[in-house]
Image 1: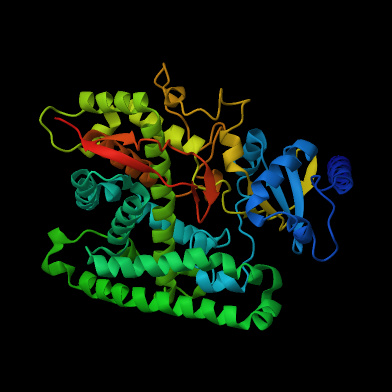
Image 2: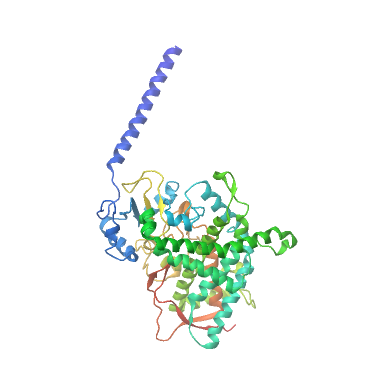
Length: 512
């Protein structure tokens, strides 16, 4: 009896295994019949690179818009040796980044240029999806971006706000229009330097750090040739390669002495523990790399991480701040509605807005969200790479393919947003009190910070800074257009997507 029972069970098991094998084989057979998402013809070896050169590289967004009308919401371009997939649709973005987050969480392998700038990928933006990335991101989110840590830098925000206010008052006294972006960038950079290095540095030192960071960002375009030609590019463009190495050496010469000074200061913190606020670089000194014998970070790797922290939080936030203020200047009725909302939330007689008061101003949050929807600082998130073949929208996304997401187009989709090109903060005011999910975990309607596992870890900090500065700028000053100079919302691509004609405005102190 036991023999027949074992025999029957064995036959059933074999039948089940055969069924599984047949299903897997059938799925593989079907998947092999699927093709890449559609796109323009490729040229062997060089790919679509030559095709793209028919137009300026800065026009790629317009090119992709034309292609998606022709080929659909997911398009393939062959740039270099691997296909680049561009996703323009909300639901496909959600399927990729949320429903299949782990598969889409990797980054393209770095070329020689990125290995120099990014410290051999020991940073958060470009590190492969794995232990090093998890370590660095967890350290940033828990030790610096956690609510309690952000709160500890309230005095730093107050310091740079006072600095910004004093600079703006000079324009009031001279009765000259203010060109706001220069002030916004320096203010935000000063704040990030303090959060990163833990010290209030002299303006001369801050300007020196800012200059080398700006040089690295602006000149980055000149070194794109190395992304396509690798070692050959280093031989053909030898002078340019040496310029890149020299820029990196200069960056290290500026930042390493500051990192060393902060290490000494941290070791002496027991003398004045109450005055010591933990900065980003403080959290890096004791980090250990798990896959490399538990070694600590080198000073050069700390330079990379500090540089990433400064760059990621400065231009994006200052750019978003300028776009928001430009719309408040252009739409005076929105500015005044915000002003009265602020006054209703701030305690009588208070000279400055307390940070906890920001939570009481829903219209402020709506304005910030509308600014990020209408004018996202980046029209694309950083490229993703898939770790295995996956089917999306009836097409195969092959392993190691580069995947890009068109952020701006999602925020401007008329199928999702009524009159999408209008600046209308009211669209974010919910009657039922529901908070808009900017992370896209439930449904991606816009993604200025990305979405999924690689979503920008500084999302909360950026929103807080935007609300803080917008509220104080509107409460302290009335902003109006320069006569005969209407606010121009045209765009141009720099490190971020900025105003083609930077905002100029007259400001006048509010009567309190």
